Length: 437
Ligand SMILES: [Zn+2]
Image 1: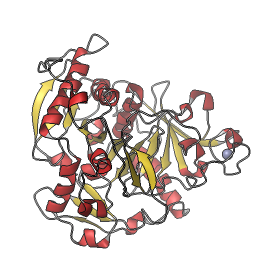
Image 2: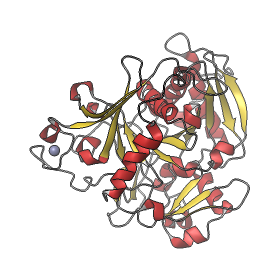
Image 3: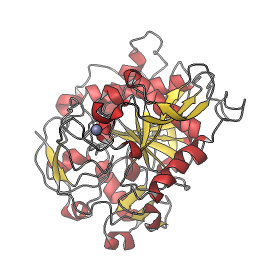
Image 4: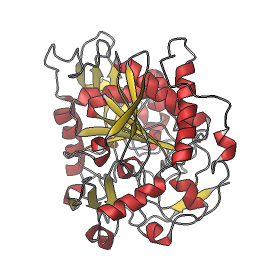
């Protein structure tokens, strides 16, 4: 079994009091003890007609929405929680700078994020692990940490209800604050929260995340996902998102087209970037893009390959990055110098937003240092091509009969990446990591 030690990120003020009994917890949580009669804002969005075109998403023009989703609702509610003192520190006071150089890596000094909390052991050799109701999960957060319910509309209208009952039976998706934010508006999207899904991508949940990016309609509002083994710390399905008004280095990386699927989704490979990854964009509909990415994620999960996902450009562009840093860390293959920084290379770091815990690292931040760290995260070229072959086999084969695009043919049995590479076994290392999820 491969494990690493890290200080878990505290995403909820209720995370510490983990094992508590269910009866009348008095914390105003989302479980049976407290949910009765509870209300939360509800925002419903239009799901149909969202065609990805060169310019943007159609079906967004019609009427003024009842509330501006990003600016008023999400960021407004987030700021309200900041005023109410729910965050562990003031992220808006954290220093941030763009590191000089070709790529424009962004460095943030965040000394508050890891304060206190003992390092915890995390198993990093299993991308899929069952949900465990005894561990912290998002039904245990306080209702005041939840900003609103986010649901597809039933009547094709964007609607907003400031005070809607919580329909536990229908398990709404919700948006909650992350009490250890790394940027302005840092939130968690928790699909169908009461279903208590483990951290794993499925088609419906991924489409929800793309829908949220489209609804926000601002390229500076991105969503991210970390699988288990790729620095997710909570095994309850969630995406993260925040607003940061600079381009991420990963978004500027050149790409080389590999193929276009039947649904019009173009898949490319990133070039000149320290972490190897695939870029998915276009598609006749948002659903086409969503299915191509989620099927790829499912393939990685089934093959036990940790990965991160960045949703960019209002949901029109998605980066998929298989990674092996935690595995290397557990195997003792990461240098002490890198480990000492305690930087956990999860989706935001991989995208070029480096959250640094030590003033020294912040002051000495350079493109070379950022590159050196991220290069350790990446699969080797050989392994990356093996993984790509698995992905293309999965999405071109398609289990629904409509997924067979003109993918570069890959001989399916030529290798068995799972057996061959560094993949399966893991080991115990010790170190604290940092990023969140
Ligand atoms: Zn309760």
